[in-house]
Length: 115
Image 1 (cartoon, helix red, strand yellow):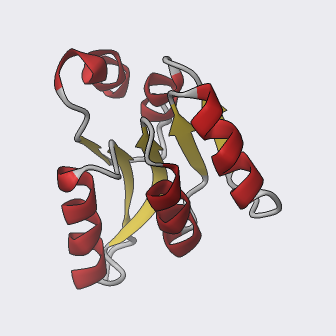
Image 2 (cartoon, helix red, strand yellow; image 1 turned 180 degrees about the vertical axis):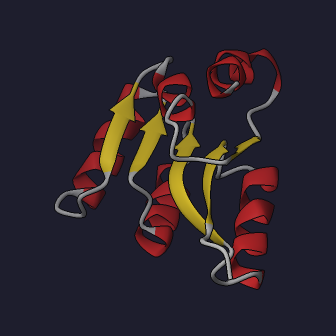
Image 3 (cartoon, rainbow, N blue to C red; image 1 turned 90 degrees about the vertical axis):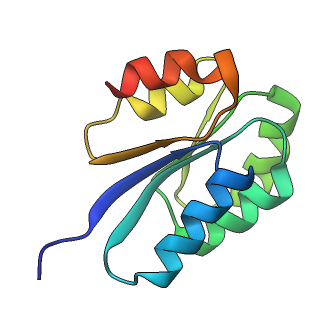
């Protein structure tokens, strides 16, 4: 059996992102979630991060990021903050799959970074 594919989900708290994580659950051992990003749904992002233990999470909104950081303190998960955080996460080379689930123009720079 081959090693699991590294996965980055840009927009993990939206409908496409949550459905992608349902696929991860349905296919155990096939994927390792390396990164999750969200705009403002701190509670769901924290829940996802604690469940999937990614290497990093990215949050665009600074206020939301402080809430996420407080709840993930001690988890070892790197937290990136700001409008370019999703692009920075997407640029990592440990992901063989990047799911672009950020709506519209907001996700363009992250997708270009992934490429």
